[in-house]
Amino acid sequence: MTDTRPETPAPDLQALFSRALDEPAPGPLLRPVSPAHIPQPSLAAQRVAGPAILPVGHEVLAELRSRASVRIGEAVGADASMSEQDRRQHGQSVITQVVSAWATKYAASVRELSAEEERAVREAVFDELFRAGRLQPLLDDPNVENIIIYGDQVRVDYADRPSRSWDPVAPTDRDLINLVNHLARMQGQGERALTPATPNLNMRLADGSRLAASAWITPRPSIVIRRHRTRGQSLDDLVRWGTIDSTLAAFLRAAVKGRKNVIVVGSQGVGKTSLLRAMAREIPRNERVGTLESEYELYLHEDPEGPEVVAYEGRESNGERGADGKLQGELTLSDLFPQLLRMSLRRVIVGEVRSKEVVPMLHAMNEGEGGSMATLHARSPQLSIERLATLCLEAGIGMTEALAYRLIAQAVDLIVYVRLVDETELVGPDGRTGRKHRFVSHVMEITGIGEGGRPSCQMVFAPREQNGRREPRAVPHGNISQACLEDLVRAGLDRSILHNRPWGSWGVPLETVMPV
Image (cartoon, rainbow, N blue to C red):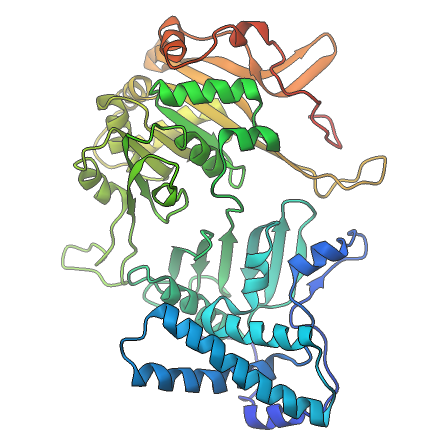
C-alpha cells in the first residue's frame, strides 16, 4: 500500500540500540490515553489492561527482536524437523539469553533493571516474534470486547467501562499491514492475507477472536477485532450473568432437546454467538452435529462436554479469478453446505447467516429432524423475518417473495431476540458510570402461514408493563401453540412456568441509569 503520510528515513537500529544504553528510561510501551472525565480503573484493572512499564522504547525492542530472530532462524535451518512448539520453546530460551545480555550492559551504563522490568522486556520481544506484538496486551485483557484500529488511531471497547483511546500498535500503515499478515501466517488459515489483490481479510485469531481488515480500498488500513471473552459457558452461566433467567433457561433447554429450529437474532456485539453456543451445549452428546462458519467462533468441536461435531469453515480466495470469473480458492458457506449435509448429521448449526446460504439452511431445517440453529443480524424479532426473506430473494435462484415466506414459515419454529443496552457513557445520580446490559427480551414463535402469505407469529416471552411496574427483559406471556407446547413438555419443560410466572424469575430489577 502507498502510505501517503510523510515518513522519516529508516532508522539506524544499531545506533539507536547503542544510544539507548546511555539514555534515561522512556515511558511505557503501550499506555491508555484517558480523557480527564473518564474514571480511571483500579490498579488491578490497569495491570490487566496494559503491559508492565518497559525501560526502553520500540526501537530497542526492534533490535532485540532482530537479534533473537537471527539466532532462532539459524536453529530452525539446522533442524528442519523442529515443530512449531519446539520453535517457540527454543525461541523463549534465545530471547532470555539475548535480553539477559542486553540487561547486563544496560545496568552497567544506565541502571539495573528490576526483575519485573526484565520480564516485561522478554515478554514484549516474545510477543513481537510469536504472538500479536503490541496488540497482545489488549488480547490478554478479559474485559476487552472490541479493538478498532484505523491507521494510528486505536479505540478499545470494554465490557465494564467506557471506550478508551490507545497508543498506535504499529509505527506506520505499512507496519500495521505487516502485523495483520503476521497474524494470518501464524493462524495457518489457507491463503488468507491482506494484499492489493485481496484487500479484505477475515480470519480468527488463536484466542478465538474474529479479525476483519481492509486496506487499499480505504484511506488507511481499517481493522476490527471482535473478541469472544467466553467460550465454555452454559445456560446456567448466562442466568448468573443476567442474560436470561431460570424460567427462560428451562424453556430454551427444552426447545433444544425438543428439536425446535431456533434462530438467535440481534444487532452486532449483543451476545448472539454466546447464547447459541450455550444452547448448543444442551444437545445430547450422542448426536452428530454439523457447524458451518466463516471463521470458527462456536468452537463446539473443541468442547469435550458437547455433542459429536463436524466443523466446517469457509475459505477466502487468493485474489485471482478463473476463466469463469469466480474467485480462485474461495469456499463460501453456500459452497460447503451440500457437502456438510452428506455427513450423516442430525442437526446443522450456522454460525451467522449473511448471504445465500440462507436457502440451504432453511431447507435443512425444513427437511431434517429439527433442532437446527443459526444467528442473524436483525433489529427486532419481527424484522428478522423480513431479513430472512430478503436474503432468500438475493440468493439469485429466482425465488419469489411468496415462496420465501412459505419456506420461512415451514422451517423456523422460534426466534430469540437478544438486546444490548449500553450505558457506559452515562453517569447516574450517585456518580457511578453505567454499564452494558445484555439480555434476551423476546422469544417469538412462528406458527405457520398467516394473512397475505406471511408467517404468523406470537410472543411466547416479551417485556411486560403492568400496574406501574415494567420489566424490559423477557417474561412469559402464555402465548404458545399446543403442538409446540406438547413437544417441549415431552422434552422436560414444566408447562406451569409459562402461566404461573408472569414476571419470570429475574429476581432483582434491571439496574440501569435511564429507564429502559
